[in-house]
Image (cartoon, rainbow, N blue to C red; front, side, top):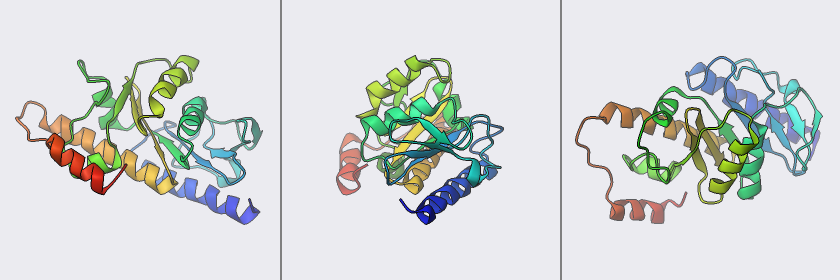
Length: 214
């Protein structure tokens, strides 16, 4: 890929990251973003970095085999990203956050691991789809990557128990939009707990999926 293309990719990651941070979808040095490059490698946010203050020149550069070749050391959760790309070849970007409402949902007892959130809105169905739950493992643990890998071919959005969401998209914008929709759906779900709700019916979900495939 050209140097100009990579510069644009770096700038896009920094812009999306700053937007997520400024609007409170991540905090401190939590969360990480990656984007696939035309040569098969990736750009990834560095370990210990804040999404609010990224330097585009210091983003981690990985080759097509996942080896760190330039920039600061990548996030310790890089394995979450690489398994999503491996299991979903169409993926162009991955976003992982510790967003408040999604993390809160991930700590609830009795979740359905095949689909954590009910289909509250059409946009949740369109952008998130069935949200799978991966069991808890420490951040960066190889067992966490194995658990995500087992789900990723069927789910582009996965909630990590007691941790947060990871979402793959064809583009960086698509991945960011989906994880924001996930966070909003989690917020609605918590607001509605204790109330009788009318989620979309299976027929309504199927119709949304027919019109707007995830």
